[in-house]
Amino acid sequence: MLDVCLLGCGGMMPLPYRYLTSLMLRFNGSSLLIDCGEATQMAMKRKGWSPKPIDIMCFTHYHADHISGLPGMLLTLGNAERTEPLLMIGPKGLERVVRSLLVIAPELPFELEFHEINGNEEELETHGYHIKAFRVNHNVTCYGYSVRIERAGKFNAERAKELQIPLPFWNRLQKGEVCTGDDGRVFTPDLVMGDKRRGLKVTYTTDTRPTASIVENAADSDLFICEGMYGEPDKLEKAKEHKHMTFSEAAELAKKAEVKELWLTHYSPSLQDPREFLHFAKEIFPAVKAGKDGRTVILDYVEE
View 1 (cartoon, rainbow, N blue to C red):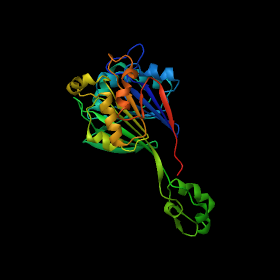
View 2 (tube, rainbow, N blue to C red):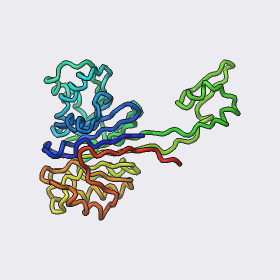
View 3 (tube, rainbow, N blue to C red):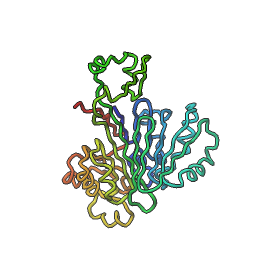
View 4 (tube, one colour):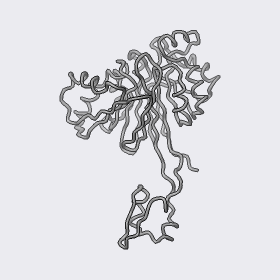
Protein backbone atom coordinates (compact mmCIF):
# COMPACT_ATOMS: atom_id res chain seq x y z
CA MET A 1 0.00 0.00 0.00
CA LEU A 2 1.35 3.42 -1.01
CA ASP A 3 -0.01 6.79 0.17
CA VAL A 4 0.38 9.61 -2.36
CA CYS A 5 -0.31 13.29 -1.63
CA LEU A 6 0.13 16.22 -3.98
CA LEU A 7 0.93 18.77 -1.28
CA GLY A 8 0.83 21.72 -3.64
CA CYS A 9 0.12 22.23 -7.33
CA GLY A 10 1.32 25.75 -8.13
CA GLY A 11 4.23 26.94 -10.22
CA MET A 12 6.46 30.02 -9.94
CA MET A 13 5.04 31.47 -6.70
CA PRO A 14 2.82 30.36 -3.81
CA LEU A 15 -0.63 31.91 -3.79
CA PRO A 16 -3.19 32.32 -0.98
CA TYR A 17 -5.20 29.50 -2.54
CA ARG A 18 -2.38 27.36 -4.00
CA TYR A 19 0.92 26.11 -2.61
CA LEU A 20 3.94 25.32 -4.76
CA THR A 21 4.29 21.91 -6.37
CA SER A 22 5.51 19.18 -4.01
CA LEU A 23 4.71 15.49 -3.81
CA MET A 24 4.91 13.21 -0.77
CA LEU A 25 4.82 9.41 -0.75
CA ARG A 26 4.49 7.18 2.31
CA PHE A 27 5.35 3.48 2.34
CA ASN A 28 6.05 1.08 5.18
CA GLY A 29 6.79 3.82 7.72
CA SER A 30 9.09 5.80 5.44
CA SER A 31 8.31 8.98 3.49
CA LEU A 32 9.72 10.35 0.23
CA LEU A 33 9.39 13.99 -0.80
CA ILE A 34 9.80 15.24 -4.36
CA ASP A 35 10.54 18.98 -4.56
CA CYS A 36 10.25 21.39 -1.67
CA GLY A 37 9.21 24.86 -2.76
CA GLU A 38 8.28 27.75 -0.51
CA ALA A 39 5.29 26.92 1.72
CA THR A 40 5.71 23.14 1.46
CA GLN A 41 5.82 23.01 5.26
CA MET A 42 2.46 24.77 5.43
CA ALA A 43 0.97 22.39 2.88
CA MET A 44 2.21 19.41 4.89
CA LYS A 45 0.85 20.87 8.12
CA ARG A 46 -2.49 21.48 6.48
CA LYS A 47 -2.59 17.88 5.29
CA GLY A 48 -1.73 16.61 8.77
CA TRP A 49 1.26 14.55 7.66
CA SER A 50 4.47 14.62 9.69
CA PRO A 51 7.81 15.52 8.08
CA LYS A 52 9.77 13.42 10.59
CA PRO A 53 9.56 10.10 8.63
CA ILE A 54 10.98 11.72 5.46
CA ASP A 55 14.02 9.60 4.58
CA ILE A 56 14.48 10.70 0.95
CA MET A 57 14.16 14.05 -0.80
CA CYS A 58 14.29 14.18 -4.61
CA PHE A 59 14.66 17.39 -6.58
CA THR A 60 13.68 17.82 -10.22
CA HIS A 61 15.83 20.95 -10.65
CA TYR A 62 17.04 24.00 -8.77
CA HIS A 63 14.61 26.76 -9.65
CA ALA A 64 13.42 28.48 -6.48
CA ASP A 65 9.82 27.27 -6.68
CA HIS A 66 11.11 23.69 -6.33
CA ILE A 67 13.71 24.03 -3.57
CA SER A 68 13.34 27.33 -1.67
CA GLY A 69 11.37 25.68 1.13
CA LEU A 70 14.25 23.35 2.00
CA PRO A 71 15.99 25.28 4.83
CA GLY A 72 12.79 25.58 6.83
CA MET A 73 11.92 21.93 6.20
CA LEU A 74 15.32 20.79 7.46
CA LEU A 75 15.03 22.95 10.57
CA THR A 76 11.61 21.44 11.23
CA LEU A 77 13.05 17.95 10.93
CA GLY A 78 15.77 18.92 13.38
CA ASN A 79 13.25 20.32 15.84
CA ALA A 80 11.34 17.03 15.56
CA GLU A 81 14.45 15.37 17.01
CA ARG A 82 15.32 13.48 13.86
CA THR A 83 18.77 11.87 14.09
CA GLU A 84 18.75 9.42 11.15
CA PRO A 85 20.60 10.43 7.96
CA LEU A 86 18.56 12.06 5.21
CA LEU A 87 19.22 11.10 1.59
CA MET A 88 18.98 13.82 -1.05
CA ILE A 89 18.79 13.04 -4.77
CA GLY A 90 19.03 15.59 -7.57
CA PRO A 91 20.89 16.85 -10.64
CA LYS A 92 24.59 17.65 -10.61
CA GLY A 93 25.38 20.48 -8.20
CA LEU A 94 22.99 19.20 -5.51
CA GLU A 95 25.45 19.37 -2.61
CA ARG A 96 26.67 22.84 -3.59
CA VAL A 97 23.11 24.18 -3.81
CA VAL A 98 22.00 22.61 -0.52
CA ARG A 99 25.12 23.70 1.35
CA SER A 100 24.47 27.26 0.17
CA LEU A 101 20.91 27.15 1.49
CA LEU A 102 22.16 25.76 4.81
CA VAL A 103 23.82 29.09 5.60
CA ILE A 104 20.48 29.95 7.24
CA ALA A 105 20.07 26.48 8.78
CA PRO A 106 23.62 25.70 9.91
CA GLU A 107 23.09 23.23 12.74
CA LEU A 108 21.20 20.00 12.09
CA PRO A 109 21.17 16.95 14.39
CA PHE A 110 21.31 14.55 11.43
CA GLU A 111 23.62 13.94 8.51
CA LEU A 112 22.80 14.75 4.90
CA GLU A 113 23.73 12.22 2.23
CA PHE A 114 23.91 13.37 -1.39
CA HIS A 115 23.33 11.40 -4.57
CA GLU A 116 23.93 13.52 -7.67
CA ILE A 117 22.47 12.21 -10.91
CA ASN A 118 24.74 11.97 -13.93
CA GLY A 119 23.65 11.16 -17.45
CA ASN A 120 20.20 10.80 -18.92
CA GLU A 121 18.86 8.35 -16.34
CA GLU A 122 19.80 6.60 -13.13
CA GLU A 123 18.22 4.08 -10.76
CA LEU A 124 18.63 3.38 -7.07
CA GLU A 125 16.80 1.53 -4.34
CA THR A 126 16.35 2.64 -0.74
CA HIS A 127 13.79 2.19 2.07
CA GLY A 128 11.68 -0.04 -0.18
CA TYR A 129 11.45 2.56 -2.98
CA HIS A 130 12.83 1.80 -6.44
CA ILE A 131 13.59 5.26 -7.81
CA LYS A 132 14.41 6.03 -11.42
CA ALA A 133 15.42 9.55 -12.46
CA PHE A 134 15.15 10.43 -16.14
CA ARG A 135 16.19 13.56 -18.01
CA VAL A 136 13.47 15.85 -19.39
CA ASN A 137 13.57 19.05 -21.45
CA HIS A 138 13.60 22.31 -19.50
CA ASN A 139 15.80 25.39 -19.77
CA VAL A 140 18.04 24.02 -16.97
CA THR A 141 19.00 20.43 -16.18
CA CYS A 142 15.81 18.78 -14.97
CA TYR A 143 14.71 15.22 -14.17
CA GLY A 144 11.44 13.40 -13.76
CA TYR A 145 11.06 10.51 -11.31
CA SER A 146 9.36 7.12 -11.44
CA VAL A 147 8.93 5.47 -8.06
CA ARG A 148 8.09 1.76 -7.91
CA ILE A 149 7.12 -0.46 -5.01
CA GLU A 150 7.94 -4.01 -6.02
CA ARG A 151 6.01 -7.04 -4.84
CA ALA A 152 7.45 -10.49 -4.34
CA GLY A 153 5.75 -13.64 -5.55
CA LYS A 154 3.54 -15.77 -3.32
CA PHE A 155 5.18 -18.08 -0.80
CA ASN A 156 4.42 -21.73 -1.53
CA ALA A 157 3.93 -23.33 1.89
CA GLU A 158 3.14 -26.75 0.43
CA ARG A 159 6.41 -26.75 -1.49
CA ALA A 160 8.28 -25.70 1.67
CA LYS A 161 6.78 -28.68 3.52
CA GLU A 162 7.67 -31.07 0.69
CA LEU A 163 11.28 -29.90 0.83
CA GLN A 164 11.24 -30.21 4.63
CA ILE A 165 12.43 -26.64 5.05
CA PRO A 166 12.54 -25.75 8.77
CA LEU A 167 9.71 -23.41 9.77
CA PRO A 168 12.07 -20.70 11.16
CA PHE A 169 13.47 -20.28 7.63
CA TRP A 170 10.14 -19.54 6.00
CA ASN A 171 10.01 -15.85 6.90
CA ARG A 172 13.65 -15.32 5.98
CA LEU A 173 13.15 -16.93 2.56
CA GLN A 174 10.18 -14.61 1.92
CA LYS A 175 12.53 -11.69 2.59
CA GLY A 176 14.94 -12.97 -0.04
CA GLU A 177 17.52 -14.50 2.29
CA VAL A 178 19.47 -17.71 1.65
CA CYS A 179 19.34 -20.13 4.59
CA THR A 180 21.60 -23.03 5.59
CA GLY A 181 20.30 -25.82 7.80
CA ASP A 182 22.17 -27.67 10.56
CA ASP A 183 22.63 -30.55 8.15
CA GLY A 184 24.37 -28.30 5.63
CA ARG A 185 21.44 -28.09 3.19
CA VAL A 186 21.10 -24.69 1.50
CA PHE A 187 17.66 -23.22 0.82
CA THR A 188 17.22 -20.36 -1.67
CA PRO A 189 14.09 -18.20 -2.12
CA ASP A 190 13.47 -19.45 -5.66
CA LEU A 191 12.63 -22.89 -4.23
CA VAL A 192 9.47 -21.61 -2.57
CA MET A 193 8.67 -18.19 -4.05
CA GLY A 194 6.51 -17.69 -7.13
CA ASP A 195 7.13 -15.14 -9.86
CA LYS A 196 7.09 -11.47 -8.87
CA ARG A 197 3.63 -9.92 -8.85
CA ARG A 198 2.71 -6.51 -10.17
CA GLY A 199 3.71 -3.80 -7.75
CA LEU A 200 2.86 -0.08 -7.70
CA LYS A 201 4.25 2.76 -9.81
CA VAL A 202 3.99 6.55 -9.62
CA THR A 203 5.64 8.89 -12.13
CA TYR A 204 6.13 12.61 -11.51
CA THR A 205 7.42 15.21 -13.93
CA THR A 206 7.27 19.00 -14.09
CA ASP A 207 8.95 21.88 -15.94
CA THR A 208 9.47 20.26 -19.31
CA ARG A 209 8.35 20.01 -22.87
CA PRO A 210 6.91 16.63 -23.94
CA THR A 211 9.71 14.07 -24.40
CA ALA A 212 10.02 10.41 -25.36
CA SER A 213 11.71 9.79 -22.01
CA ILE A 214 8.50 10.74 -20.19
CA VAL A 215 6.40 8.29 -22.21
CA GLU A 216 8.95 5.52 -21.72
CA ASN A 217 9.29 5.98 -17.98
CA ALA A 218 5.64 6.72 -17.21
CA ALA A 219 4.50 3.62 -19.11
CA ASP A 220 1.95 1.57 -17.16
CA SER A 221 2.04 3.86 -14.11
CA ASP A 222 -0.79 3.55 -11.63
CA LEU A 223 -0.58 7.34 -11.29
CA PHE A 224 1.10 9.87 -13.58
CA ILE A 225 1.50 13.38 -12.16
CA CYS A 226 2.47 15.80 -14.89
CA GLU A 227 2.77 19.53 -15.25
CA GLY A 228 0.01 21.38 -17.03
CA MET A 229 1.30 24.92 -16.80
CA TYR A 230 -1.33 26.27 -19.18
CA GLY A 231 -4.91 25.13 -19.74
CA GLU A 232 -5.69 27.43 -22.66
CA PRO A 233 -4.83 26.06 -26.12
CA ASP A 234 -3.71 29.51 -27.26
CA LYS A 235 -0.88 29.39 -24.70
CA LEU A 236 0.94 26.66 -26.67
CA GLU A 237 3.56 29.02 -28.10
CA LYS A 238 4.22 30.44 -24.65
CA ALA A 239 4.62 26.88 -23.31
CA LYS A 240 7.15 26.13 -26.03
CA GLU A 241 9.07 29.35 -25.37
CA HIS A 242 9.44 28.68 -21.64
CA LYS A 243 9.70 24.89 -21.97
CA HIS A 244 6.50 23.99 -20.17
CA MET A 245 3.34 22.10 -21.19
CA THR A 246 -0.35 22.60 -21.80
CA PHE A 247 -3.11 20.35 -20.43
CA SER A 248 -3.56 18.77 -23.86
CA GLU A 249 0.13 17.92 -24.19
CA ALA A 250 0.16 16.26 -20.75
CA ALA A 251 -2.92 14.25 -21.75
CA GLU A 252 -1.20 13.09 -24.95
CA LEU A 253 1.72 11.80 -22.89
CA ALA A 254 -0.64 9.95 -20.54
CA LYS A 255 -2.42 8.36 -23.50
CA LYS A 256 0.81 7.20 -25.12
CA ALA A 257 2.17 5.85 -21.83
CA GLU A 258 -1.10 4.00 -21.11
CA VAL A 259 -1.18 5.14 -17.49
CA LYS A 260 -4.15 4.41 -15.27
CA GLU A 261 -4.72 7.98 -14.08
CA LEU A 262 -3.31 11.46 -14.73
CA TRP A 263 -3.13 14.36 -12.29
CA LEU A 264 -2.25 17.79 -13.66
CA THR A 265 -0.05 20.09 -11.58
CA HIS A 266 2.37 23.06 -11.62
CA TYR A 267 -0.20 25.59 -12.79
CA SER A 268 0.67 29.09 -13.94
CA PRO A 269 -0.31 31.77 -11.38
CA SER A 270 -2.56 33.22 -14.09
CA LEU A 271 -4.59 29.98 -14.20
CA GLN A 272 -7.17 30.59 -11.49
CA ASP A 273 -9.44 27.57 -11.96
CA PRO A 274 -7.89 24.60 -13.82
CA ARG A 275 -11.28 22.87 -14.02
CA GLU A 276 -12.37 25.50 -16.55
CA PHE A 277 -9.98 24.00 -19.13
CA LEU A 278 -9.96 20.35 -18.00
CA HIS A 279 -12.20 19.31 -20.89
CA PHE A 280 -9.34 19.89 -23.34
CA ALA A 281 -7.38 17.13 -21.58
CA LYS A 282 -10.40 14.85 -21.07
CA GLU A 283 -11.06 14.75 -24.81
CA ILE A 284 -7.64 13.11 -25.20
CA PHE A 285 -7.33 11.13 -21.95
CA PRO A 286 -10.57 10.71 -19.95
CA ALA A 287 -8.91 9.50 -16.72
CA VAL A 288 -7.49 12.92 -15.89
CA LYS A 289 -8.00 15.03 -12.79
CA ALA A 290 -7.07 18.61 -12.06
CA GLY A 291 -4.57 18.36 -9.25
CA LYS A 292 -5.28 20.43 -6.17
CA ASP A 293 -3.47 21.05 -2.91
CA GLY A 294 -3.79 18.01 -0.68
CA ARG A 295 -5.20 15.66 -3.34
CA THR A 296 -4.49 12.19 -1.96
CA VAL A 297 -4.86 8.60 -3.05
CA ILE A 298 -4.04 5.26 -1.43
CA LEU A 299 -2.69 2.87 -4.04
CA ASP A 300 -3.08 -0.80 -3.19
CA TYR A 301 -1.90 -3.97 -4.88
CA VAL A 302 -4.16 -5.61 -7.40
CA GLU A 303 -4.70 -9.27 -6.65
CA GLU A 304 -3.90 -11.47 -9.63
